[in-house]
Length: 365
Image (cartoon, rainbow, N blue to C red; front, top):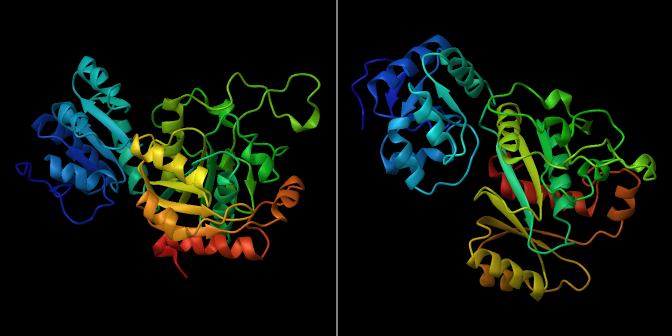
């Protein structure tokens, strides 16, 4: 491991997993990183071996990869995450690795001021250290969006900064579920051109019960009436814009709840929602066996026709069940009236609270 740059702002990897890290052994890049860290008065860990990189990858608030170590990082098969940047002194080399690593590049020393701004954002209280939950339904119509909204509302009731993000282009609009379809604020169509490092955007999103809502855009052809939202050429922004937007939200929010809909998740921190019936469990089993979904937790959706015992779901899928969400006949009518799940006390809200405790254990009450 590289240890030859004597500076208090760059250190060998330590136990503070939330700090920004640099993956490099290039003395020129480390020197410029040292200057940026000193300007921001921030401590940075150096991780330059495969084992260290694997250990740091999921929890570091910011990851800066030198072009000298880009091939090693690309070869590790790590999960996709935001907050990763490629740095180098040659623009062509930076560009060459920016695409395979799906990360924006910085050419130094020209963009050293931008690097210092990135470090300051990552070090800001709550910056880069928020929790992220991606909810994905193993089959259609089992209420993954409802659970996502309920978790977001219950987290906001605990005083947390929460963003609810819709990534399904055909979900009908999670802003409608939250009663905010007519509220002013940005949707994905307004963020289609977002790239690289973007500033604070949570303040531009519709807010319901303390939850910042980033919903899909809907077209507004004549005849659809007031339920249709603004016109947009795409319901969801392209992948590089999504990455930039989530990175911005991650710097300011305690929790980001992502409604994946039927869009394959990009993270191994996925919450797989499975109905308590044979067909849904078999669908989940196939997805996991083929690598289409890598999940850490299962949420079971119970109700009429969904009476498969929880232990069978666990035994079949080989993952722990974080919670069971019961059927609540009142929710559909409430959401049609613009009353979000999780707002009122009741059976569903208690289930959402218990699930939130299980998925974010350091918030458990």
